[in-house]
Image (cartoon, rainbow, N blue to C red; front, side, top):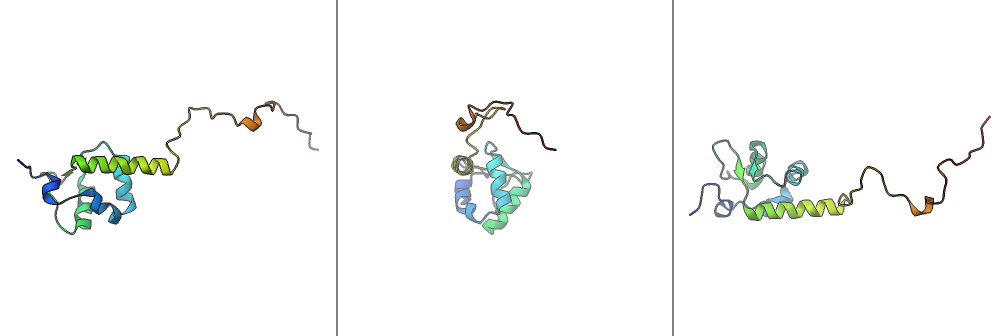
Amino acid sequence: MTTPLDNTESGMDIRSLWSVLDPATRQWFIDHTGNTIVPRKITAKLCEVAGRPLPQDSHGQLQLSGDDIVFIRNRAHSAFAAHGTGRIFEAAQPKDASQAHRSKHTVHPHRT
């Protein structure tokens, strides 16, 4: 049995719309990978890009399918890996090996 929000039955597939979404909308999906319900503003952009109304709940929100969620998480992971944000350091950065033998108190000549 399908529900009115079943995206696979309606033909809504985030993968097919991804390349034509504006960068801000794509970034919203990347920043909110755990959301299964898409807010009205983002749903309106999806409808605009799709060129037709998409199934929405009584609040004008769209529910993502499981395939859509997996696709968005994969895109988010790829974006983080491409920009190097997968490399997280604690508060103190690791020391550069070339600077390991320098003293903290390097003597500098006084300027007059």
